[in-house]
Length: 279
Image: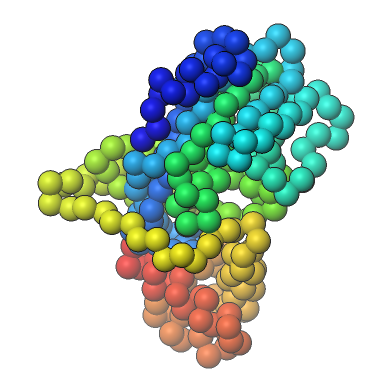
């Protein structure tokens, strides 16, 4: 956990006033891999690594953000015509979140943000979702807007789709916004129903091991995997006309028609169908 007092002092030194503090956690997923964007079930939990944002409102509509981890400052204006261009940097997540919230009806105010994270980037712990949700909480609170956790998560997903270019599911943002200490979160990614599942932390410990393999959705095979699953649905719909997503395909139905799918689409779809049943 990041020391709050240190962040407050750093903000005062940089911006000359007292901040408000906002946070969102990273996550691990216990089961339900690649099922979220297929409308299935996932069982993630929030971890004790977090992104912390110290923030104060401005009189104008300008957002000034400083990343402590990268020692970089960047800014944009909420009223800039044609705003939200992709730069390929961390600011895309910040600006994308602001513009997604505004597109959903929130009227934001300018802000100064100091951002620090101990969620390792590229480790598969959803550092991007923690960034989106933490800055989203800051934007909403400073504007006095009313946005619940589900809407905040959906805005984060929209930010990744439209402003980062990653066609992610909803799991990462959902658990960052709605995760609860001592619980996993069973999420139905079609209905967005989330059920906290208690974990007896006296008996269970979640251990995260660094494999040294970098994981970055925006430049990985993630979008390819999603496209392969969607292609599988198109092919299976010839035999199962009512299906919309792989969530709708039972194991028995898949076994009946899997021979009609080419590789690697067959392998992708097989994993999702059985993983969803396991979850």
